[in-house]
Structures are given as structure tokens and as C-alpha cells.
Length: 193
Image 1 (tube, rainbow, N blue to C red):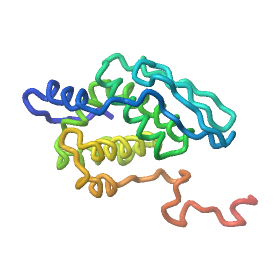
Image 2: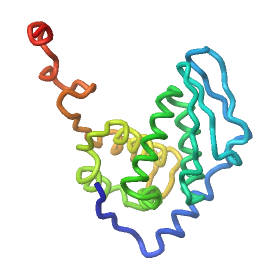
Image 3: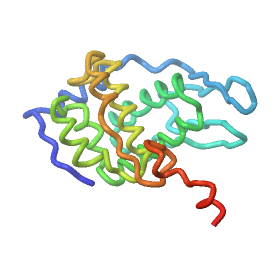
């Protein structure tokens, strides 16, 4: 699933400067545990590399120390903070798992290179590496990450590019949970056979 990405001459330094200019994380992050219908708190998110998330009678450790590059770690803490403010806690936890999978398949540097890639090149990269991915959560997590880049105007991304990100195609595998046409829905006869 590795692809070719092109970069500017001094892309690493430039991207790291963008990350270091991100606003400071708050002293604590509050999110809703939908199951207990209660607010939960992550204390000192900048200093803490392990965030405990509670949802649906489950506790999950979000372990940022699995990302060795401190700039990538800081970027992804911001991304998770952003996700927790917009999505269900369980979905945010699944997205963190997808980030680990992406790191494993692409490398940690991929997150830095993703910021530096010109928007126009994302379509080619997307079509060659992601739109046919069998791991639906990885695809959705990348689209969320790119949208996050747009909202915070990181690298080549800005809010004007959000429609471009929104319309990157996702091709669902036949029989997946995402129904795109009626062809994967079983008839009553097929279900009872």
C-alpha cells in the first residue's frame, strides 16, 4: 500500500514548523461517555502519552508513545482532541487504532509527508493507495485527518479544500457494511437458504 509521494526540498523542517505552531493543547480535555451519560476528563493531555477513554462499558488506553517521533505524536494528540470534540468516543478510539495501522503499513514519516503533499497530488495518491482499501476505518480516518489539516490550515491544506477532501471516493467492498447499491442486500429467500 506504499505509494510515491513528492516533496519540496526542505519539506521536513517546514512541516515540523507547521506542527510546532499548532495551538497549545488545553490543560484537560472533557468528553462524553455516552453509556454512563457522564463527562470524563483527560488530565494534562500534552504531558500524558496515555489517554484513558471510557465508552460503552469499555476502557481503552490511547497510547501515543507508540509514535516515536515527538512531532508526529503532538500532531496526533491534536487530531484525537479534535476527533473527541466531533465524534463518539468509541469511534475516536477506532480511529486511533487506524492511525497505528497506517503507521505500520506506511511509516511514521507518512503523517509528516501527508501534510507536505500538494492538494492536487492527493487525488492520485488517494486513488493509488486508499480508495480501494479493505479497511474502511483506515480510509475514513485518513479523510478525517485531511479534514483536520484543512480546519487548522496545516501545510497546503485550508478550509477551501474541504470539499475536495469530502469528495475523495471510497469504494466499499462487496458485502461490506456500507451499502452503496441494493446488490449486496439479500432477499428473504436468500436469507432463509
